Image (cartoon, rainbow, N blue to C red; front, side):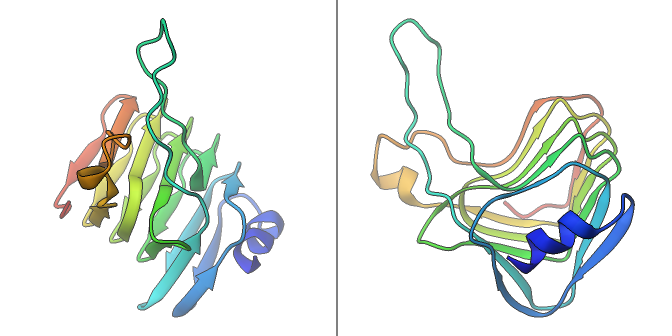
Length: 166
């Protein structure tokens, strides 16, 4: 949980460099300040979190459970760059959630085997580019997993999404 400790102690607008190699976090991390998280070549970040079957309780339109490995909450101006994201298990729930985090970016990352790669909620002017995202394959075989999305803008204005391989 070294990354969680680094996030807890870094000042707003600080930079965390993730060294090359595999880094495993035992819990999801919520980041509530602007930071830059930059990976060296070969930096891999693993998170727990099982995908959740889509549930549709009676009388509702839908309900999707999100458990983000990195949850940027009220962290405008943040950057995630050059990191490979993998689940600890076979499949993961969500790699990155940008919530109320305007002017943030996810650039040159690789995201593998998550139900949701990048989710953007109530965040404007975000940049998502040069990423390679492969969602989990479970949704192809198990009909209870009807949702798997590489990039989803739930709401927000002026998202710039370019040159991603999904």
